[in-house]
Length: 161
Image 1 (cartoon, rainbow, N blue to C red):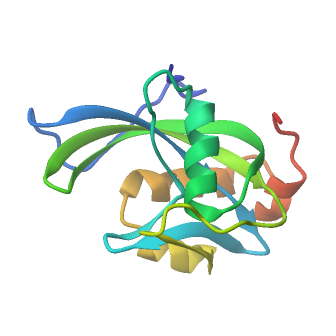
Image 2 (cartoon, one colour):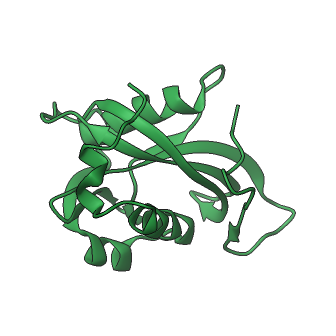
């Protein structure tokens, strides 16, 4: 089940249409030493994450997708915000209900399972300029603006295991 945002705000990004089908998903924001972990694929640069499978919770989807795409395990996560992102992808029109989490990742990665995308640590401002989805850019900016002394707090912040 998807959670509402803590402040009750649910912004929409992209152009809405009646053609869209709903697709809930979970996405992770991990910042280390001023760089954001992203995945680069044919369609561009994205936050690690993706759609929920049948019977899967948002957190379960986050852990599965994050590991598949980056090779890192989610050690801890904290819900940050949710938004709609309207996209046309692979001939399908989707209204993605994106749940964003601040993620503390494992120190060591295994080989990613998803070979269509390549994980990369990119300086935050460069990553924001490259990212395809506006909702993800907004979520990263929210993570950076949260009541924290610096972006590296994602490593020390108290998170759910």
